[in-house]
Image 1 (tube, helix red, strand yellow):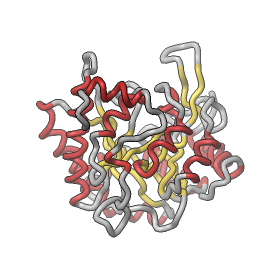
Image 2 (cartoon, helix red, strand yellow):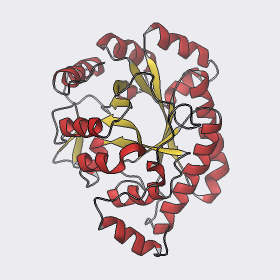
Image 3 (cartoon, one colour):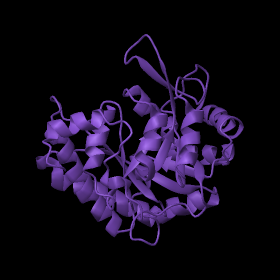
Length: 307
């Protein structure tokens, strides 16, 4: 931090849209430098998130592979099923030709009283990722049930740094997923958190739809965050009249400029996983597999990405 106090610092960030002051934007973290492991192939690799299947992870693995994707993001339900036998998951994924790109480790509580238990929990998930042949561990912060203050950004960043240092020590890089209804919902909060995140410990999982729904321009943000972005969620969202006022939808059915986001990723030389995510099936009579197929067609036909 500079000599500005934290309030002035946040105001300065809000007023400087072309400047990123991020520890996590430093380069030199790729494989071989003691930091993040990236996919062996260059450029954008497209995977798919199992969240749509609602915890039916074996079915998700089978159907994501059948649709044609080559990577998968799993949730903590996979740890519940395979936590004592990670080799079985690794073998199942290998037979289906799927890379284990990311594990969603669940919410990260960052209050002092939760610190030890939370570090132990998420580090156990990281060990599972390592043993199952996975790559990244994702966390979303759990917002306290009270108004958020500026000290929360520092406390969360400190927790991310500590956890990230420990997961990196066992070979699994940590990524922070900004998210609706979390401390890191609005763009200014994301900026403040990542400004205190250590480059060697924490990467950004940039979600194009959550960022837009939180009030930001995801295309500009991709250019702004640059090398701090280690994983991307390709996602779309549209407004609805019922609470919460928005709905996650298949790519191309919402208001996110997904094509512009992919163009920006290419501009910054993004080299990693872009995971297509849909929380749940939208249309009556639809299915997770049908939605995955529709997203595949958009990814290949409209975005020009390969699976």
